[in-house]
Length: 276
Image (cartoon, rainbow, N blue to C red; front, side, top):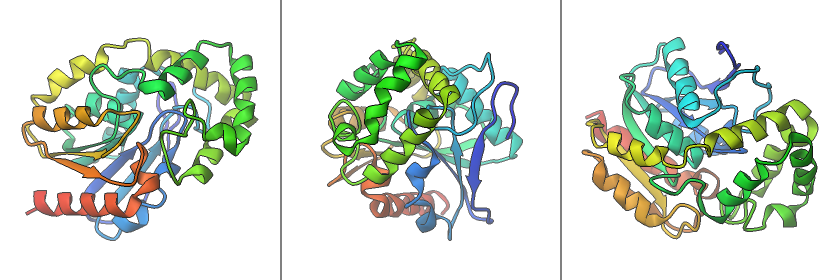
């Protein structure tokens, strides 16, 4: 999909089942969902876009709006251009923040928030505060700093991916490649980090808007999440008029990496209930 200021790659399984759109987080891409898509695709049309969040492969054009509202606008444009309706919008990590802002779109029929930024947790935890600080560096210095992410011990630090996933190091290593190999992507990563964290109250306002989301909603949270407070999962489920909370054990924030089978099971049950 080509927009005015960006090109968005996406994976589309096709099919005639309910449409499920999966949104990833910062310094990630659509491969966050690789283990989940095969479990969902027999019963659903699954679409996983690669948003320009720092692990994308096609640089954005000058002038692209990389703020959370701008990224939500990209998602809405994707739904429109593909003529998708009654979409189940699923977001994990920063993808969940984007989903909260995109939820009012009439093409969204169901909302699933999976261990994500919410309320005042922006940037989220020690991990988020660290990458927000790195985003203030010039692009060249940022790229030089990120070279250490080639090493697994560096990726497993609490300030990197150590509190986000227990079992997903192969994916996190691959997510670093665009930044480490492309000056343009490193530049984009700095831009998006600055833009996403520029307004630290935006999710407080988005939470108030969610009170008007009168369609089916599901909140899936890591039971012992150290980046996205479990209390936020409970609060989101309570404020959504049709919200329901499911907690998942033996996982950190990136449930699609740590517990893809359990997450797929929960999503399939949710789709089966709302389609009755």
